[in-house]
Length: 365
Image (tube, rainbow, N blue to C red; front, side):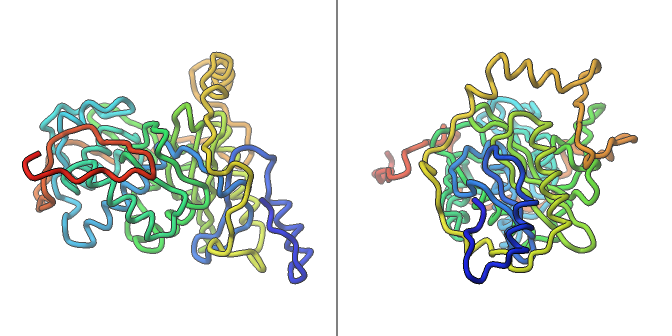
C-alpha cells in the first residue's frame, strides 16, 4: 500500500512514490538497504509462499553457525539418503557424498538445489528438523512476525509462508551482518564438471549494478524474486512475489530498482515503521491455477525465442554478450571441522499447524 498522507507528508514525496509504484500485481516492496527507507510497497504484509526464497534463511543460519565457531566454510556438508531423495531442482549427488560448505552455499544460491539445502541443514544442526527450529528462531529474533518455516529448501508446504516485508528484514540482516559474504548472492554461474549452470536471477550480469539475491518458484507461489543492486554506493532491494513468469518478475524488479535509483528517500518511512494492513492478509494466495495451467505454461513458452532463450522486453535489462563467469563447484576438499551438533536419524520433517506443540517423548521412545 502507498503510505497514507499526513500533515507532515510532503507532496513531492507522494509524487515520488507514485512514480516508483508499478502496475498492481503480486506483493512487492522496494527499499534502501542501508537506511531501511521504503520507497514503495504494495500488500507487503500479505502472507505468501516463499518457494526457494527460503534458501536465503538457510544461508543466513549457516553464516551464523560459522560466526559462532560451529563450522567453517571448508567444513563438510554430507549428503544423506534423506537429502538425496529431495525432488528437483537438485544436484543429484549420491548418498554419502561430501562437499565443502562454501560450495554448498554457492550451489543453493545459483542452482537452487533442494538436495544440497537439506544437506546443509542436516550438517549444520544434526537434522533438518533441528535446523528449521533455528530458522524460526532467527525469524523471530529479526521481527519476521509473519514468517514460518517447515523446511530448508522451499518446496511447497501450506504451513510455510512469509511476506514481502519479512523478506526485506532478512535481506537487511544478511547485508548488514555479513557484508563479507555478499559474493555468494551475485554469482553469474557455477561450473560442475562439463556443466555450466546459470543463475536463475536474470538481472545478475544484465542489470547495471545488480549484486543479488535469490529467485523462487513453486506453482502455489508463482515466480518470486529478491533483487539487489548497488550504484554510486547506494544499495536498493526489490522483493517481488507472485509474478506469472521469470520474465515478468525480472522486468518488474528492474523497473522498481531503476525508478528507485532516480528517487530520493527523503521523508520515506522506515521498514520498521510500517504496520500490517490489508484484507485477508493472513491467508496465502495459491497461484497454482494461475501459473501452472496449460494456458499459463503456453504463454510462458511464447516468452522464448526459437532456441529456447528468454526474450526480455525491458530496456532496463541489457543482453549478456559474453559467457557468464562460472565459479567451479564440486565434491571433496572438506578438510575443516565438522559441526558438533547432535546427529539425528533421517526422518521426515514434521509439518504441524502453527498452533501445535509436539508432545515430549519419553526416554527411549
